[in-house]
Amino acid sequence: MSVSEPGPSRGSRSGAAITATGLRKAYGEQQVLDGVDLHIPEGSVFSLLGPNGAGKTTAVKILSTLTPADAGQITVAGHDLASDPDGVRRSIGVTGQFSAVDMFHNAAENLELMGRLWHLDPQVIKRRSARLIEQFDLVEAGKKPVITYSGGMKRRLDLAMTLIAAPPVIFLDEPTTGLDPRVRRAMWDLIRDLVADGVTIFLTTQYLEEADQLADTIAVLNGGRLVAQGTPEQLKRQVPGGSIDLQFTSPAALDRAQAALYGTPATRDDDTLTLRVSSDGSAASVQHVLGRLDTATVHELSLKTPDLDDVFLALTGQTPTTVGVGNADAPAPADTEKVLA
Image (cartoon, rainbow, N blue to C red; front, top):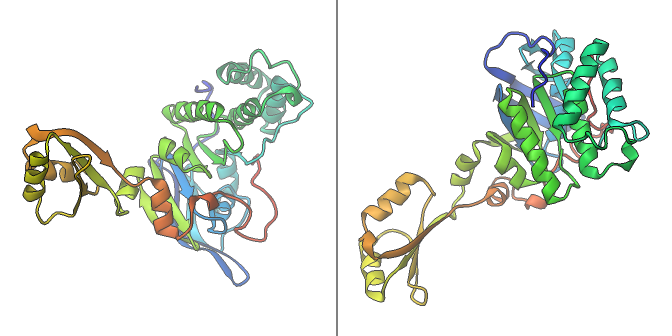
């Protein structure tokens, strides 16, 4: 997936693509971001979740230099945002919620236009454009106007335009909204390829499954504060409701298992010969339960853990249908757009 020519200077390589300490932003009386701390490693996917109005869009706009912060120390790709905003801009790409493509030009012309806006050498633009058109499966449609493209093709071109300058950090603002499941999964594969090449992805999404599939780290923003941060599995383990479901070979085996697990929260179902034992889903928890049983009488075992929907509801008090960047963070009307030097 990589574009072989080196991209813009990436500043000092500290192992962190994005750091923020004490990030704050208010609009009048509304405190949109209230002391947010971030540490996002290079070559990883970081997903920011939260209900509308939580501050996600504001965070993206600040980190991509579109909106100034009220307070906080921020570095992006080794560049201090306050003292070297141009260095940040040269090191990032932003793909917004809506495709920023010219409908009456073809893929190559759109890529050339973006390359010229980045002040790239014409030969570099030509080489990178050809490679991106091939990598993003746009060869057959490459000479047709974008107005004839499907929604998935437009999104692929939009992401290719972000990559023409080979930025080490990319902000993806709901990149798969409106795409059908097949195309969405194809976009996931493209994102995974980018990360495998060392690109850092800052992802906002309204699909919790997408964050679960792609993110190395997920942070949940609520009321301007980070209320949780960790891997998807770590977040799921913070929420009660997980269980180990054990089905036994006979009623007698079920009786013995219930006696062996005396004192452990469990629900018995005589019709299906099962015990549902409360668990945090960890390997240690499973081993502890099995260590108390005669496993020869266990016919089937299944592990059920809370999903990100449960995590989101527990942490924010809202349903996942409200997840998304939206435009409710603040009165600023402009959507995130591609940032050029």
